[in-house]
Amino acid sequence: MDPKAPSESFTEMTELVLPQHTNAVGSAFGGVIMSWIDICSAIAATRHCGRVAVTARVDALEFKAPIHVGDIVRLTARLNAAFTSSMEIGVRVEREHARTGARSLCADARATFVNLGEDGKPCPVPPLLAENDEDRRLAAEAAERRGQRRSRD
Ligand SMILES: CC(C)(COP(=O)(O)OP(=O)(O)OC[C@H]1O[C@@H](n2cnc3c(N)ncnc32)[C@H](O)[C@@H]1OP(=O)(O)O)[C@@H](O)C(=O)NCCC(=O)NCCS
Image (cartoon, rainbow, N blue to C red; front, side):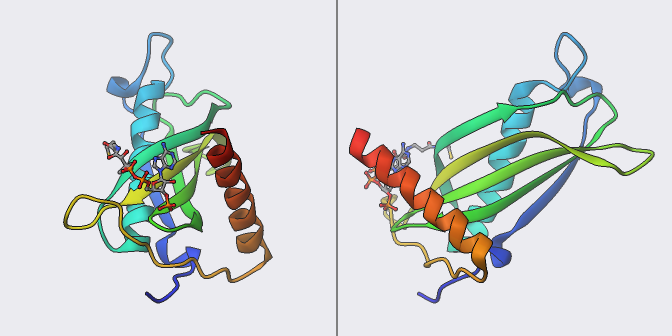
């Protein structure tokens, strides 16, 4: 399989927070944001491996600031690392101020997706082609986390 750069699977998704997306205090409901995170990262995983991949894990999900009704929400997902059949994807959620266009980080997370073959079993993904120091740093950090998780399990 040919290696693929993170830029080939980079995904950007835009949503608008409507009243049906809000919680009891009028900001965006966390479950809705989590669903958008899952969709955005699933698209990046699919772009990398060329198949539908399943969510195995979501780590380090942090809601840093509320998102309000009427806000434009920008989600971005990028491959941090590709292992054998799994991929770690970093997701950022930004709120975009409708009038000024200014963006601020409201949530982020890391998701692990596993590529499934025709038989429904994990199957290999293309290696990740690191194009710059940032790509190499993110891949090394993901490998470190994976190693620590495996030694714990
Ligand atoms: C994810 C799933 C396919 C893994 O199947 P499995 O038979 O346990 O697979 P394996 O133990 O052979 O592991 C396969 C890969 O998945 C990774 N993996 C499995 N469970 C994981 C977890 N909880 N967290 C992170 N990685 C995980 C393994 O590290 C391995 O990675 P590698 O091939 O890159 O080394 C299986 O647990 C599953 O189907 N889960 C439900 C998925 C789902 O329904 N998601 C929600 C809807 S999309």
